[in-house]
Image 1: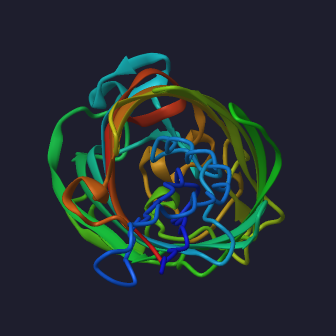
Image 2: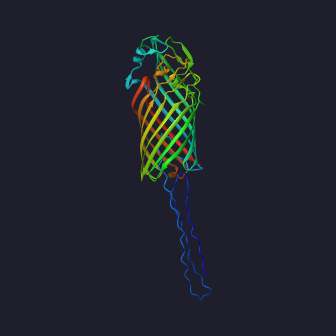
Image 3: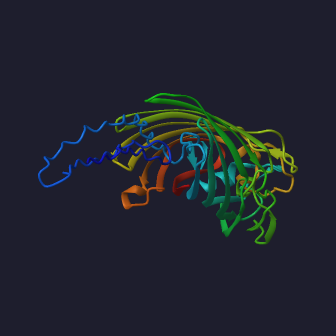
Length: 382
C-alpha cells in the first residue's frame, strides 16, 4: 500500500510586498502485504507550480518626505513622532546682523519715527505629532495627522523708545497648544520594478489657536501681556490646500527620489491675515546598509512669502510683530535612517530618525535664523 502527501506552498504577505517563500515537503514510503512481499516504489509526486514571488517592498523614503510611502490595501500605519528645532541670531537677506543693529536701525511698524526695542535671542521649538495612514485601495491611501506645538522664547529688551542700544533685560516666555489638523490623499499614478510616481492632495484645518498671549518686558521696564507674535501661534486660523508630487526609484541597495509639496492658504483668517504661500522641494538618496536598515541623505529647498494682512492685536516692538519680516528662502541638508523592527523580532514596527541644518538662508528680515532641526518617529503597521 502506498501513501501520498500533497505538496504545500506558502506565500506570506505583510505591509507592502514581501518575497514569497515556497515550502515543499514530501514523504516516500512503502509497506509490504506480508513478510515475503517485495517493497514497492511510490509513484513520483507531482509538484504544484509555486506562485510567482511578489516584488520586494521599496526602501522607505526619508522621514521628512511626505507622500512617498503608502500602506497596502486594508492596512493601517500608526505613527508617533517628536520634532525639535532651534533658532537664534538675526538676518536681513543673506547677511547676519547684531541685535544692537536691529534696535538702532529698524523702524517700528506702528510708529516709524521709533525703532524696534525687543529682539529675540533664541527660540526652541518642540512638536509632538500623531498620524494615521490607511490603504484604501492598491493605488490610493489616506493620511491624517494632528500635533501639539511648544515654542519657548528668550527676548532681549533695549532701554528707551528709539535707537538706544543699551540692554534693559530679558524675558523668558512662550506658547503651547494644538496645531492645525491635516488630512490628505495619496494616489499612485505609475509603478514598475524600479520607478514610481505618486501625487498627493491635502487640506489643513484651523484646529490650532492663533490667539494665544504672552508677557514681555517693555522699554520702560514695565511688563505687558498681549497677543503673541505670528510665529509663536500654534495654529494659522486658515484653511490651506496642500498639493504635492513624488517620484521615487530604487535598484538593488540604492534608492533615490524627488518631491514637491506646497501649502497655500485659501483666504484670510478672522484676525485679518494669512501666511505666505509655502513651497518645498526635496531630493534624496538612500542606501540599504543591511536588510532592515536604510540610511538617507536629503537636500531641502523651501520658499515662503511674507504674511499677507495684519492682526491689529499684535503690536509688539519686535521684528516678529511685523508681518513683512516673515518668509524667505532656505536650503537645508538632512541625514537620517529607518530601522525595521524585524532586526529585533518586531516585524510590524520601525524607527525613523533624521537631523539637519541650513546651509543657506535668505530671509525677509530682520528675522531670527534657523540653527538646526531633528526628529524621531515610531511606526506600527496593523
